[in-house]
Image (tube, rainbow, N blue to C red):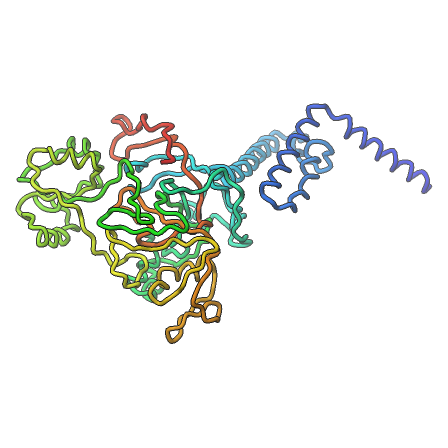
Length: 484
């Protein structure tokens, strides 16, 4: 009896082996190809535990021990129809997840901070392979949704597990002048009812207790892991190890003037002799409807009235005549100088106090800033009470150390410390629309683990100020190189 069972088992094994090795050549080619792709992906990722998934790939094409497509043998048309859709959707979600995580993702320009390089309404392909894709901090997340499902207003990711930062090898490294997409560094903590300005600026302006307790005004306070923070896009002005300074709106890196950027623009106040600008002229100057601010004269902007009074007092402008405020590039500035009725053009000055580092008492402004050193991995900095506010967030938040100051002595991880060695590279990011960009001047350095990728191409561009039959689609921007 026992001998018969043994013989039967041997026959079954032989039959199974025959089935395995009698698969069509096409099926073997598919299996070998996908196994090679899977192995190359594992080598790239560097996590060899994933090799345990190879038998699953082999079973999918050859052995078929697991009935992956069991539903195809059903005679119920409803089951076939529903499971067909489920199969297609699951495959699409898995494919999109891996493409979105490791290769590229879509990004839409939401604000004018990079005008005129990238325009509001541009849709971009962002290459994650350029600087090397990150292994996700939150692997259990829904693809194509950053942190919250629209309409439902629920999180699109599961908080645990959370993996440590690791970046795969890319094709390039960030250089000065590159346009970069990154997770918003100050976006770790968010007041859901008031996301702009960021949580830390709100706390600086109103007090942390007020922001945390007044849910009727600020909403719930939530925390996002690095890869779930909102995506920003800016131009890299300085890389790790550089020293950056701004003097009268001119950026200097390591003592050298920043290379001229076509399309860079600043805000100006424009006085006329009573002339009011037409929409046609504004369009010719490249000024969007949103940016056309009339401070005095017919239908002035109410929120700018106090600002207009201060400007008029300081600059000798005539409040009885029209005063406009809008951004101009170098070319549009020259064009405006030739427009009849323009009597004075003055660049906008800023005395804002919510400059990075908040409460640092540096006396810096948006237009005159620094100098500040951009931290480089492995470099050591001498710490003192003057520069600590500049690097405090890096030491405590980004590199996760315990930081305290007791009786004028700096303690890191409970040890008195006169120096600090940085664990990551950092970058200084700014917008080309210099006076209308929330950038490193307001929230500081961008850590390397926040870098998402490089925009490579505009695939769609929609003009927000025009209708579908009136030039809304900007055909001339299709397939435009978005890297610089």
